[in-house]
Length: 305
Image (cartoon, rainbow, N blue to C red):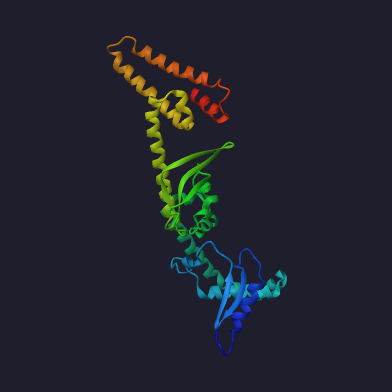
């Protein structure tokens, strides 16, 4: 801004357009005020940083394309009539030179998205528009909440907590995974929290690795508990798949011991069969408990089948 000449005419025109425009695709201008020789514009909050896109050399936007697009939008705002705007050869002549540039932009964008998918292959599960939305929200991990289901089939949502409660700017960390099973939430507490710092494809890759390690830890604990805990106490603690795996481990161990003992003991196989039958009978008795919830009852019936 020049103190003698005032605000530039082009700047004033763009400010007036922004004040009039109300669109979900255009940043809203909330206020304009002067402080000395400085002109300040208060814009709506954007949950992502466009600077990362603007200065990303992998995404190429030719200056002529940007200028032509802005001119077309300004003319559309002035005319505000689709038929009048598009009638005649002027618009065709105006758009034709942009095709090559737009194709180059699309090619660069596709290359950029492909690189992101190469770093985190689960991005192949989502379309280009959805992936762009995810990448644009990378600075706000909470905004990624609706997209976990698209990338992880068994995750509906996650629980965040602050990595440093004393620092308001500290990045959140993921501590628990949730999956909706019927009308109930099934949760998995991670073995250690995943900090949502850095590029989104990086910390989502860490989340995938941590999830796998957590499941392995749960199975290891179940392998011990299925031998040490009574069946009625073991089943409510773990999900049906882990309970079934624990029972299969127990059955395998019993059969292996019976084979070893069978060389010397006549009733080794009969004892093993009786033990397996006792487990099945105990499961049947558990289903008659009226205090069982619907989910626990379904889990026990699945173990019996």
